[in-house]
Length: 125
Image (cartoon, rainbow, N blue to C red; front, side, top):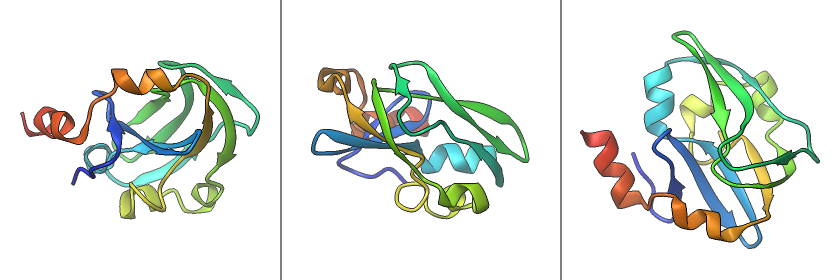
């Protein structure tokens, strides 16, 4: 499943813009490929992140993967529910499974991301 109105990366992260802020998570495709998610390493609120930098990791039965930020900004919220329920990403990758919320520092970075139609082509190949 690919949702319209989101921005995507080739490494399977998504961004949903909310005013000057944005939510970041991993796509439904990514969670399906990883399998059952058992742990999410979350950053701290107040941390600054830069596009293409790791901000944590996600551990699944099959693998451990770094979480790569597609955008730059200040982390203003983390999804604390993932500490006790990392499987929320498996159940609801686009809603309940969001990972961090960031105050965007450069909205132009979104132009480097993929719209839903282009991301669909990548995962269908």
